[in-house]
Image 1 (cartoon, rainbow, N blue to C red):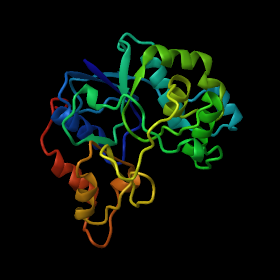
Image 2 (cartoon, helix red, strand yellow):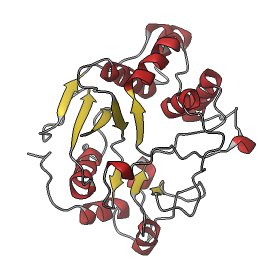
Image 3 (cartoon, rainbow, N blue to C red):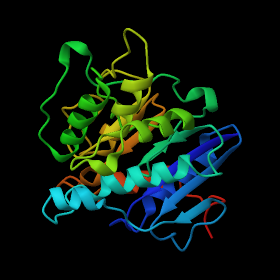
Image 4 (tube, rainbow, N blue to C red):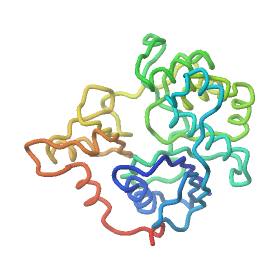
Length: 273
């Protein structure tokens, strides 16, 4: 059985519909037996048939002191804490797939269809060590922690081993940091030993991303429905961020990606009341 683990943040602007449609997509397209484990501050009222643990939001005292009382990286620390709690729990039986809520499985796959190697954004010729965005700074911390030459933050589901994850947390305690480390880049920098890895290319059969504008690898324009349909053709996963989810233009009266998602998965899953 495949275990999907998802750390859920605070209630989203879209009323946690990201999670609703992820679960619909898994039930529709994941062909092997699976279970879903969710750690959340508050369980959504409509959610059933998953293992859900309510866990308080987390921010380490040391980081709060170093950041002068500002919770600058609360989502990142909270996610790390949920993940650490999970890998030390009885719910974690060895290996698991860490997945996000703002992602959709749009093609039939079994457990082997989840890549057993993590695609990356930069190869060693593009090793970037001074990313300046908030998430970029967590990747910088990951580079420093693991010595990785690859950025594995591709917003895609990845398979992890609990034993390795526990060793990572013990060797590199995140509660001692003022800027936390990005999980995938740290983990695979420590535990992946291939000399070369396949970078995520613009032309790929694995993901189509929507962030309101294109320009980054695997991210596509979404101003008209034809652009979305063309981008997802032949892909396995769709992912998006809040900008892409709430993107609208004069060419469409509403939020095009939201309507596309609703039309793609219109039926309730067993995970909804």
